[in-house]
Length: 120
Image 1 (cartoon, helix red, strand yellow):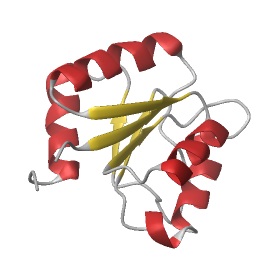
Image 2 (cartoon, rainbow, N blue to C red):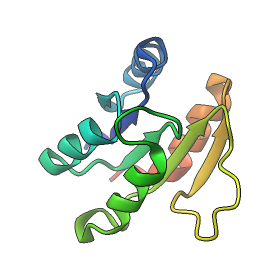
Image 3 (tube, one colour):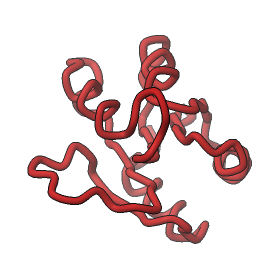
């Protein structure tokens, strides 16, 4: 069973680069450019992991994470926050891990493997 990852970032180069790396590692990858597109993706298919940027147009990471946690089928999906600017003063952090951009591929992949858990 292939692990599925939803990548959310408003920078097309970042999406393209990580998609290539993750697909070469055997992950099934879906991409979205903002929270609105990402919500459409998760409505169609619940991923094993969501990797999201924080600063995005239309719907940012904060609102996207808040919406995810309000959906029963997505409550247990881990969230990896991948951002250049760490969110400040957030009482209840709606993500599991926060990595600061630029993140090296090794750290990114080991973090993703840990969050996705063992293969089924």
